[in-house]
Length: 255
Image (tube, rainbow, N blue to C red; front, side):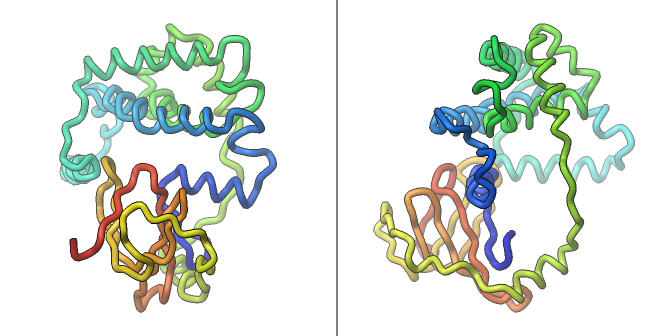
């Protein structure tokens, strides 16, 4: 959230962050398309296998060791809903896939500190997202990295970045920020129509596979990379909700 503008999906958020703070770029100076492609592979292919591996019985028992069983049931139901009802990959298959993906990452690191060269990019952070959980949250399973020492060394370099500094903001304060702000003017954005849906139409946007909860609003922009919906609510006033085209589905609200 920036004022009355809300950006959904990590890929779009990273685009916005990179525009606000272009140096150093999250995408590097060369092979930006490759960086985006590797990041997408990490999100859509590596992550599901890694989490299925991480949440095998031993890993799940470790993560939820001190959690109320009823809370675990609610969490499991929530995760299943986010997967659109699809089952999690079996642990044995996830283990084999994860090992293969780690070997691929290791080959990317041969002769260089990061997967795209001497400087980190979004590709590194996207891959680290999954490996971090293995190393930090289920350390009893972290032995899977022993076969890829280059990846283990890379994990240490990634961890060294830390998390910077941040200030907590309550949900109520976030709503007030939105209520007191004005959304960005998107009226000058170049309209790219792929659906035969005109601006001003009530539409629904949802992810195509993970976290498929729908969002409805008035379509106020559709560029080559994103959709922008206008929504109104007494608690927030008028806000814009932005979604990337890739990974999301748009249709008329009455379709």
